[in-house]
Length: 124
Image (cartoon, rainbow, N blue to C red):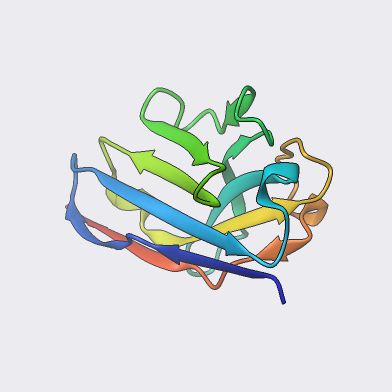
């Protein structure tokens, strides 16, 4: 049974930082490309950042580039999203996702597995 379990969300003031974690089980984590997406109420799910299976290749949405960093620890089956300079409009549920092709995609339809999400609320 494949499981992706996110943690680290919460309430933070604008300009603050949070680090999200996603622990993956039930698959060979080091074979999977990973990504973070987010979804605000009434909006579509949007790509935040992605990372290849080795961690050598990463990519970000333009809106977060320079402020967010995606990383992974294959020994711990965990992917991280370090977020800084957070803005109120980034309030959303953040999801991690995994795909078996080992690279990252910005299209959510490319992903095989999803976590349940973790709420991030940025107050102004």
